Length: 293
Image 1: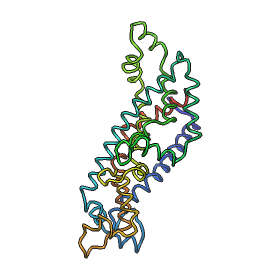
Image 2: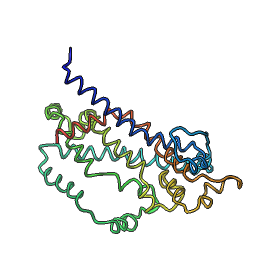
Image 3: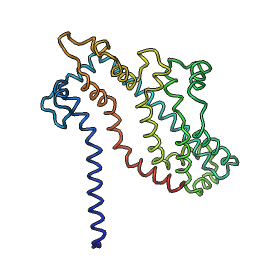
Image 4: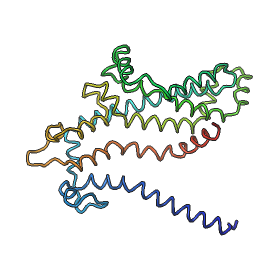
């Protein structure tokens, strides 16, 4: 079908703008990867370049000079990300399912209560006392999982998405004798794939990038997640005093700027590769939730 000239011009302009924005978004990441493979002295003299003149693995040798420490960080981060995302998705979807049901008498009051928590909070100190003193979760993996398990925003988003599922599906299941939990598990969850993928991506990114909870509650190095481990390495006043530099030969000058770039690649690489697999669900889930809301 032949398109009008105005449509063709609009498409051309749109594609050009999207291409430019895509390149601008990719440039920082390419610069980080390139900087991580650049010798420290070259960055000091000439600054960062998209294509390094000299290829160097010094930054990665420094980061992995104590590989057990890095692998333990990966293990902890992967564990809390997987467990937190799965459990959080299950609880969030149950909350969204209940709030989306028109036959739930108190759904408006409960929705307001959940929304109210986004406006006010008890503060950092009472929250810290609750986690450490009353729940006794200091220096445990649960301290890294429980605080981020539920989010008011995620519950509201899930509720709006589940509103798009026809009520006739639930009614027909009830006629066949299905209970509420059976309806939720066998009908609602399979139809909520885009919404679950969207919220799952939010939650997994949150768990993967979190270092603040570890900074507050974790004292054992074996419990350090990857982000907090890299934060401690990079925040050290003198690289030579860190565990990374302690394993290097005396005649080696530890990298500083390149180590930051390598740490960023180590921390973000796996989660970047995950995004393409859920991107199509991510867009569909946000669109449906926004329109229905």
